Length: 239
Image (cartoon, rainbow, N blue to C red):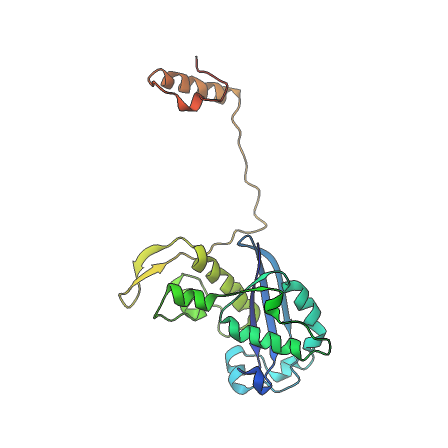
């Protein structure tokens, strides 16, 4: 199963008021494993980014001046996500902006939900943790994910963090503990990624002496047992 964990940053909060996408970040999961494959782009929105939005993500108008327009990146983005299940925190927000951008293209692209599944991790979190804070920072704290490097929002960074949150939210092993308010809480240790450049594990196989000692031991053990399950169907009997 291919999933794409996605996040966007925008000029404001409402595409109906003319606000646009200025950053898209995606990371790929295949069979619930991070592949290292990702999609990331900054976009010139051809409009001013609101001060309130800059305070959230830190992406300035000056930074975006020389970036491509959405129509320049639309096909690459569409090709990257098509056929996947999109994993998004507060999916209605990002899906609404993506479809708004698609609708403004000279050559229209169909709504994203027509070519992708949509999984909303905010809805998942609210169902699993009703009555609690379920924004990304709160979920990182709840699931023991280190997001200390996240001073500002960023689409690719948030997608990477959300991938960790989603994997734990949807199937992580839990341990019972108490949170800082004294309320019961299911907490999970954070995901530990293995270094892709690590050395190959050394596999030591049993030699003939090891095998003889093993079967001699089983032979002696079988004399003390009425039924010897490990001998059934293996074609080798103990002496």
